[in-house]
Image (cartoon, rainbow, N blue to C red; front, side, top):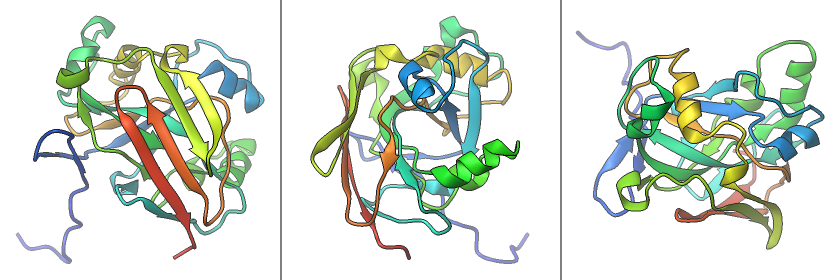
Length: 230
């Protein structure tokens, strides 16, 4: 079999403490998963089924320089704990879900907020607001065997040296094992999947020249700079 064009390279994330990389299969995201953020977006926190959406695998960016995207005048950061799935499955029991998580990383769910809000207002999907090029900056993955499965600890971000988000992982409405269990009811999870677990309150706009430093206890930091559009 021959291809009509050269296949795109596999997106692969470094694994801290090893010479291996983590090839990305799919990128899932959870919306509305910290009560304070739900309120700042004008909604009421609840335990309804999680709000899932997706980003393309090649939206993952490992470079610290993140270009400002086209089509928006309101470009936001969202700091998140990211799960790296090491063993797939369907209808995974919540009590077994942690066994399917290979490791954890820090991620930014970058968002064209104006496009997201406009789409939501007319019942359209969030793709244009969430699933664009370079919309998923990511740190190296830290294996769970090295740090365990974090269920508490500080998650925060500084923008130009000022703290903008500052919360604790224990505030997640849907916990990591519950997210994996719920998602596996809808999709066949596979090794290589990434799951962004939601962002705390304090999201806001950034422009070219802004520098962001995200931190999660046990995972280190993720630093990016917003650059001019391509």
